[in-house]
Image (cartoon, rainbow, N blue to C red):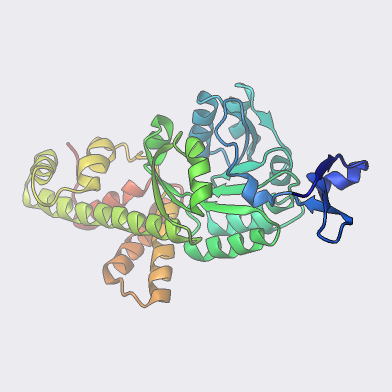
Length: 348
């Protein structure tokens, strides 16, 4: 049996290359120094995740990101946060979060960084676009994207980050601001299985997890399919209600009938009772974002050769709504477009 002696590195700089030096006796009778290399950054994420008091980074703490960041604080995590709106960070800073000066600053502070951003272009810019981008952070090991980025951008950004030994996790969410506040979101995740297992304590803070696979972009595809269906239900229900009211039916009675019948859907069960019938139109999801999601879905379907004729009509209705009431209008204003065209008011 060879004799083994552990030797501590004498030079501090050697620590970046050698975790442990081992002196062994070879079969030729001479001694050799064997270096055990440092683990890659993307591997180390699987070791210790979810400990109380762990520091996380969060970029984009607006309508969706803000409530999710609050839930992380509730769960005992420490946060370093950044948003283009300093006002958006104030509630978190008031609870002890550290405010960073840039996305790169966040990524130089925390090994795990989450982000929730409105469009694929902004995701690409915030991660890769400049010296202030997340990819330039010195501490980051893993980036979790909670945005609806689309599979194309997800794959592109994942590949670029891999060149820097930074892991990428798709984790788009569904459930709106209410779900973000309550921790009842659906969280669709695509990443390597060991990474998924390690990050579960963090991601479960937001809601129910669904591991869609390891390929970058798979979770994004699932999210786009869901959001296209949600928008379709909203448009179709608006048409059905406009017709019913025009014929003389009470809108609330018709909704009640639909909700115990085969036509029930997320719009009839939730969006209409909450935001259309009471005339508040404040469900909490912007028309521009819904339009963006459906457009991304149609683009992806076209790339795969999957026809989406109904989806194209839904996209057109969202475009009309955005033009009529503005990009920041609530997407339930689709019903108001149908009201104007039909000359009715859906209320109850």
